[in-house]
Amino acid sequence: MIQVRFTAGQSVQPAEKESGNSIQYHGYEAVVGVTSRAQALLVFEGTGDKKLAVMIGNFVPSPQIFITTPFRPFKVEEVSGERNTRSGYYWKYSYNKFSLDRQEDPVMGGIGSGSPVYNYGTKVEGDFFTVAPVIATEMLRPDGTVKFRAEGGLGLGYLDLAGDIVLGDWLGDPLAPRTQIDYSGLSFFFFAMGRHHWGSFMLGYQMGISVTSSRPYSYSQSYVSLDIGYRLVL
Image 1: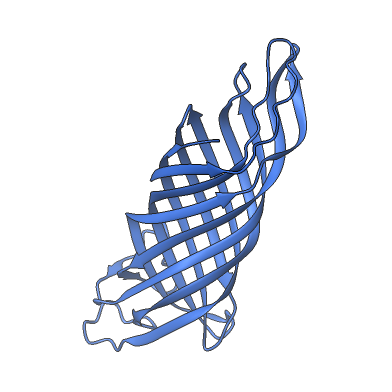
Image 2: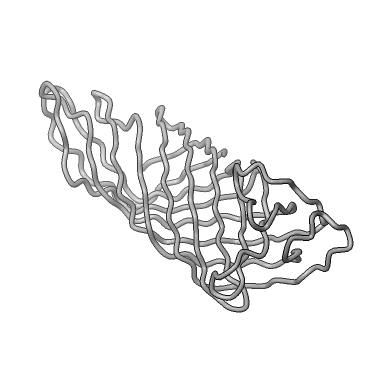
């Protein structure tokens, strides 16, 4: 993923120097970028009783935007008098867009399943907005800058999708009937992410899943992604 990160707002004052080290805290951050992700959309009957279809897309670029509030540390751990890790929390608001154009077996399909891929000519596109509290642990350099961050969050999302899909196991039959789906509503969302920092550059990898309970169909979308970014911190 190629990301451009812009930051606005007042950052927290750095901690007082100790053993030649100081900690740099984050302000508000707004991130705009492109992520390369493998994604799957699972369609269930009713509120999740029976899986009807699986749409997939493998590592295709898509736009992504997220905004984070200032990082608030729980504690700072020291080794030999030097601050080297810290744990804390912040809030994350994100957006991503997806487009899926292949189907797999409705029972076995999903990311990394090895299920046969059926090209029915169907396609589902959508947008996903999320808000989540995030718990993070950061590995620090001697100058207090972030070297690596591991984080995870659980929150709410807003899922908006539409397209046509083949419901049921038709084994790639080109005459399989298509069903139009169109949904907009809330979804529960979980994600985990790791990212490396080199100055203003970032390499990240993450996985996430959202679950929606609805009628006549329920949806679960999951993804794994690779993110490459550039960030500006004020």
